[in-house]
Image (cartoon, rainbow, N blue to C red; front, side, top):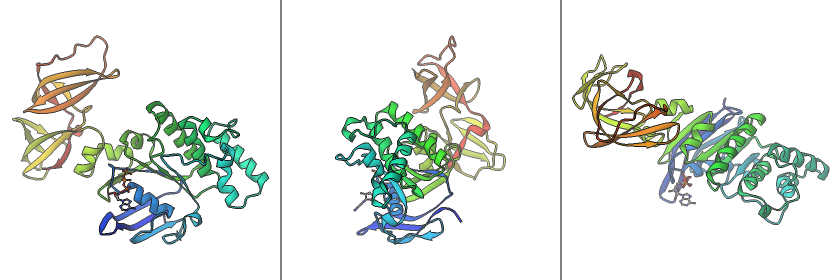
Length: 344
Ligand code: ATP
């Protein structure tokens, strides 16, 4: 049995159902992200795990124990919020030790654990400061130390990086992942940022309108999206309406060009899709006109038009290589394995 299990979880607010039949099994020490657009129910599921919301139906268990009706403080869960939520009138050390004090841990033991936690987050000398004397990133690290100090069974992170600027966001997300792996703590991380989810998760649950559309490793989610929504939400995708010519051989026609895929297809019409890095300019392929070129440093993003629709393709920067110019007539192709097939 998994360490954390969400079984047919549902939640309605009045007549509105915001979480439908949500199932998830998380292994001990796993880092799972909930990724989805605003309003898809990520926070609501997290709050049910924490015990701040009661499910309308379903069951939550941690380490074999049914906690569906347990109060938050009985669940041994640590939580970090977007807004840090530190106690402004307490020092950093007092904030970190807060949960231990509530749990009745003796002062001397508390001090040792607080020092250990401040070391863990890389702020060993800031115990005497107040939250307002810290940067946003430092405050969020203190919030993490406060959540971890009582040795929770599960760590819940609700968009912990959203209030920080881009550079700090990246360094703090790596730090969170390192600490999580060092402690081996089972973690759920809520975000609407796909790059964040792809970069630090063992598995991602892509949520859409209160359901889990797909659960998988970052590579599975990106390379083999299970639904049209996942395909469109995670990464950039170019879509090409296609007519299936020979289902068994995986032969299709796109804009007058025949393409053979590496798998059989359903008969009729499908949508072929390719990531920007899978498409390339080739001697033969789908006819396109270059519309623009963006130099992004390590890659160049080419914008092309195919039958009136815009398509983007990325190529690695090669100093000295000639770039296609706007207006150039080219052909686009992808490796047989580079094509995704979406429902017509
Ligand atoms: P965001 O990224 O914007 O926080 P989310 O995916 O976390 O979005 P939730 O906060 O879980 O989404 O909200 C899901 C839906 O439930 C939203 O439509 C929201 O308005 C609604 N909702 C959340 N809490 C309540 C509440 N206490 N009462 C009524 N509706 C609520």
